[in-house]
Length: 75
Ligand code: SF4
Ligand code: SF4
Image 1: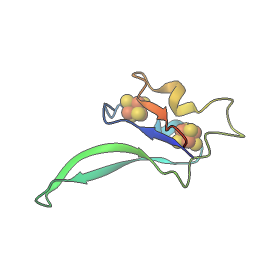
Image 2: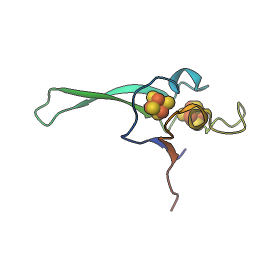
Image 3: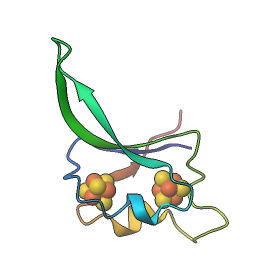
């Protein structure tokens, strides 16, 4: 499904516990030299069902306080 978390995410942890499919998790990025970098929340597109069958709207979008979970435009 075409939902993603923008880089402005503040890692507040509001969304991940609400996801009925455990599709949201913290991933560690790596710096160019291979050292551990920032950790950011990401949505696993293979697990996300946009909450169909659980909620009327994507619940991660609903709970995010700064509106950084967005639908990717479909082409
Ligand atoms: S839309 Fe629903 S299933 Fe998809 S990541 Fe958000 S909370 Fe999880
Ligand atoms: S609720 Fe929004 S700001 Fe908080 S971790 Fe999730 S995507 Fe990031």
